[in-house]
Length: 562
Image (tube, rainbow, N blue to C red):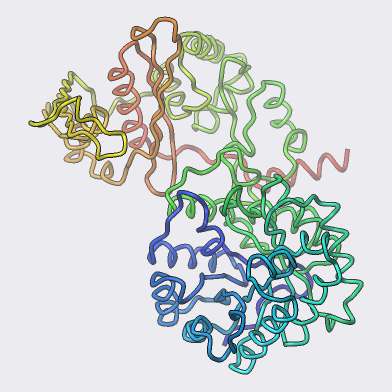
């Protein structure tokens, strides 16, 4: 039997990625996607996972049914629904019957707090809305369900009619709700308003049966995380949010920022310490499942969250990480990165090479030679800041350590249209034109020559397919590699179609990501260079490990002692 969810001495986490997060524009989850995300959240140690609204669509019904067959390990799965409809008894509302059929121990019910929504949205009376709240929660309680009450539009409601807003919470408390969650549904509030309203509700705690409060914030003003933190500091003990801040409009409070801020900065326990180190991995895994590129600049978990570019920064961090890092990146499962660019100094180069497992002394003339080569290439249009895999291959080549596991001897690409294709039939709202590309490559690998061809819906896709087809006989692991992003930039628009083009290609093997760069006045040649380097990089042995959290803690201790 599962223990009671939550953290009695800290803040209880409630994830709504599968319901509120799924309302993000352009995000669509299959049942399998939802199951995979639920298991990732369960592994992270999230106490409450809101799975969706059973009965609202067949997908959610199937999701809850499958999790009854294969329950989560520690998390409490929560079904979500609204109060009953006006003029109908809760016991007769088919929506609530679907909620009961989902079989969850907890149900989150949202009700109207704002009189504007009651009279204009629901088209009913203020008294009937209070009855809807009481009747729904009482009925679910009679069916052995434990209720979390989400007070929708709470902060707008409290600003416009505080007496009625408080009455809705009293109705929920008296009916048997176990949590009262204050929702900034429109995301228009600021931290000081959130704190004041939370404190005002706590001042009425004797009318609310001293129930614990929760907070649910949206990011329309860019303050969702700050608002949630303000509410916790004012007394809330549950935080609702989503992984990576996914959600409708501008998104929800991002748990990937909230959790470390609460636990590491404010001292509110949220997760077991050993679970916190999975935060970055879970963030990126879920971004893969929902098929959205990770935000490289996200706090704590982003690829650039602990990246250092300026030479002075790099030199200082090497002496003591506290100089330019607010926490040890390993505590949230991230890592320190040194970025190389035209602004790099020798400290950047040496630190980056150490990460590649290539120790080089500052006095070694090769270090200065690498730095000068880097700056020359960036002047020509290369961008190694965003293509670290290409930089490692460049360094190994300059030091005579690049193995070149294969060589592209030649390639040919043609693009043709199918019969019946005509420019006069172009329709922006219709299907794509029937155009196909064919690529043929000739490579040398392990003393042998191979010729291969493949089709694709574009020249880059065809070239990628032909390269893989030729290489898989010798390197089967290539099959696990896929292109996850492709970016093209014209470096000098004044040159028109003769302009130099920079291509960045991002690769992934499902666990790691790396990016390569190609530059040429011919976009196909630039793409080929980036593709070849990306596949070559995947065949390198693993790099030496970066500094660990133990290294960081020893530096921090030394700083305090001094």
